[in-house]
Image 1 (cartoon, one colour):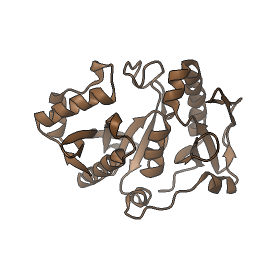
Image 2 (image 1 turned 180 degrees about the vertical axis):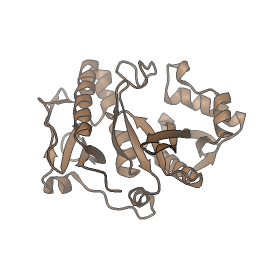
Image 3 (image 1 turned 45 degrees about the horizontal axis):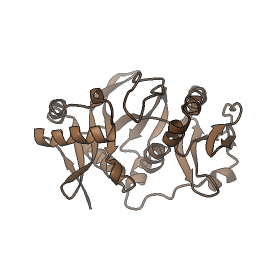
Image 4 (image 1 turned 90 degrees about the vertical axis):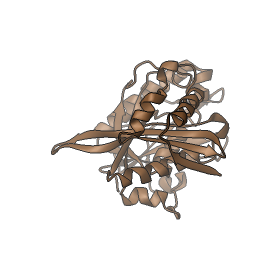
Length: 285
């Protein structure tokens, strides 16, 4: 059983400090200190903890912010961190924390949550796009500069910024007790979807094969490595190749009016495969 709690006290924030060090090791400067977390929690921000019995195993941190439109600034919630203890991966903790965040932010009267994630991380993409119903048409180059923690060191900190429209039918459908069925790769292929580039395998590691196509139809597929962290640790040069290749692809696709609207993970065959689905025009909310 996992319990989600809204945290406020200095003692609770010290626990959050310690869990950050486990989730993002090797860089003390990236840890949000307890006194800042207390300030966030007491001034409209949000610090959530996921507990198994009395043990803190997950965290989510966010705060109010602004985005800018032609009619002036509008409020939103900026989701800054989501992390799970490495011994408790694949238990649905991240999803439970995001669902609690969804409820927290709607109770504040806000309708948009934004956050960033590395577009080459399949697990994160599956949660954010497929399970939560977030969409993306914003690519940020090296947004955090050189990062030194154990998860991010060695690569430019490129990120997707996703939009989570918390009151939309799309999101409510994903978070309901009876979520909509997910489309498979076969479903998309039956719709004559455009595959933007092939991939090939060398010593078990996936690499983009040749140049990519610019999307031209209603739907397009963009494949990424199933396990980018393992790929990067085994061959950093290939990790850099994926970073620059996917950067150019997504920047051009977003410039052409495409939006990431789905993510498909397939376990069939010799190699698990992961695909973004890009849709032409505005996303269907």
